[in-house]
Figure (cartoon, helix red, strand yellow):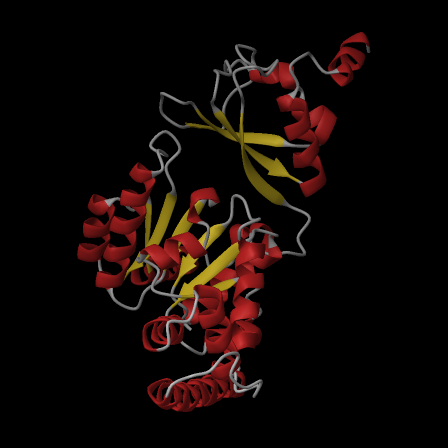
Length: 336
């Protein structure tokens, strides 16, 4: 359109609007004819413009047909919908790379209703996601800006990197820690969990910034040792805490500085009487972990209580701990 307009203005001295109109009807080959007399040079220019316009139109139709044939439109629309749903997630986990470990981890996360996004550069990730029931997934390198932004890492709780080689895990850790500084999450850092093939890799990943490093060989050795030492004893964690159909649950609950329980003795909470929940550990904000705390233990601000009980009981205990005023249930117990 620009070339045609300038051409008519130069060759036949068309006014601007006449040149635009003549170019439009010529370029689209509608056949309205000449709006005013055109010279021989102008007619040659018009023929050239028609041929070029037809070629451009034909190529455009071919490109559109090819895109539709390959399903690019559907792919783009599906990705946009997926990204919109991921952008609504909060406190989710970003799981980097698909493999056998990823399948097992996501099964546990789903059973515990913990949202997650799987990030992997494979082109057939949509087929893999359908086969293994990944509700959210992103086809990109996890350590790149594309992978970080599309997985909505800024609102995530943490990252689980399960790469087949340590180099990819290192790249993910470095990228996440750098992104953490860019968005100002130094006070609330991401929880980074990764795997390692050896003790040497485990130490290396921890130094680089991983919060937890799981070594498969070490876990296997610990499990075999536990079975060998106590062959008649069932694995309590596996039988009760890691199964979705168990009545027993365990959770870490943070005591806010506005909670009524701050600076109170643990026994004053009466969690066993009200919610049938036991406190098996206390993790003070600035102190060592206290296993099996006594009733006289003072609860400090922002400490964390390790609760064991039924899921319903733990939810009730969390509601009691979050209250700012002394709960009515405790007042009723005191009267009796």
